[in-house]
Amino acid sequence: MSNSTSAEGTMEHAHRDDAGSRLGMWLFLFTELLLFSGLFLTYAVYKFTYPDEFHAAAKELNTLFGALNTIILLTSSLTIALSIVAISRGQKYLSIFFQLMTIAMALGFMVNKYFEWSAKIGHGIYPGSETLQDKGHGQTLFFGLYYTMTGLHGIHVIVGMVLIALMTFWTWKEKINADTFVRLESAGLYWHLVDIIWIFLFPLFYLIS
Image (cartoon, rainbow, N blue to C red):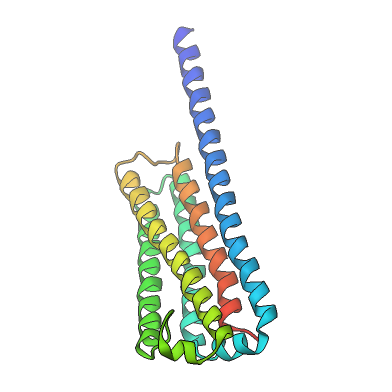
């Protein structure tokens, strides 16, 4: 009888921990949404003020780079979701495979972004450059927001890579398993937020009409 009561108490404690972890992650994601919402609002105000300059500046960006990164992140959202499904079914190694695939695609995103930024900087288009200042105030604001928002998003991608790598290690050590995988779910939620933010950034900067 005492063993049964102890087991029930342990399970109840685990459920409370899981609920607390989920709530903590949702609160964190809410603060992230507030941060980017403020940046999106700033972008909207400046675009309304300098519509022609923003349109001209957007032509300097390579839509192919942006589209490729969009495909990469959308695919990575699928792989992280599949890793959660796999671990919930007790398929440890399949879950690890999908987590590693997610990390690989995140790395591909960052490599792609590195080449894109390098191309722009190589053409003298970066905050404070004479080339950009000659283009006018509106285009200067556009690229200031471009580097700030995509750079901040890039930092979130790197954090996500580290987080998922930690989940992979814990899955390997079976700290994450079919009975307890709330931490992997929370990492998945964070990664989905990273993807959603990019889905907004892509049309704002690359598809201005």
